[in-house]
Each structure stands twice: as C-alpha cells, then as structure tokens.
Length: 119
Image 1 (cartoon, one colour):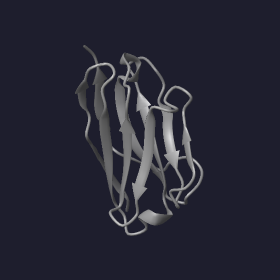
Image 2: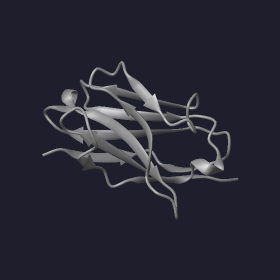
Image 3: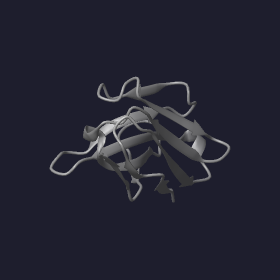
C-alpha cells in the first residue's frame, strides 16, 4: 500500500519561493509516476507537474512553466516541487499523487498542503 505525505506549504509573499516535498511509503517508489496537482477554492483540481519513473521526463502546466521545477529522489522515496516567482493565483491546496502502474491517471493521493501567496 502506497501512502503519500506532503510538507512544505505555507504563506509567502508574491515573488517568493516555496519548496514542497512528498514522502512516499512504498517499496516500489521507483516505478511510480509522480504528480503534483493543485486545487483553488471554486476551481477544479489541476495538474501542475509530473515526472516519470526515471526522473528524466517532466511535464508542466503552462501557468507554471519556467517557475516551478519537479524532481524526485528514488533513493529517498521523495518527490519535490520547487516553486519560484510565486503569484497570488498560485494559491491553492497542493496534492502529491502517484500512478502506481507508472502511467495513466493517479491512483493514490496525499492529504494536501496549503500554499497561500499574499502580501
């Protein structure tokens, strides 16, 4: 059974940075495709970034391209999201998610961590 726990959220001023981390309790972490999603109040949950099992293939939403970086450490069973140049519209609950077969929609979700960008 895969369990995901996010950390690193908080309040930051516009233009600031935050680093989110997701720790996975999974013996097969290296075969999981990992994603970060977010959901703002009144909005649907949206995919922010994803990283394949090797860590070499990454995809980003247009709204975060060039500002956010996803990375994974298969030795530590973690996936991080470095968020720079944050904007108020980045305010949302951020969720870590895993596709346990390495492809397709995510099957496992974390509990989420709040990110608030405000002055």
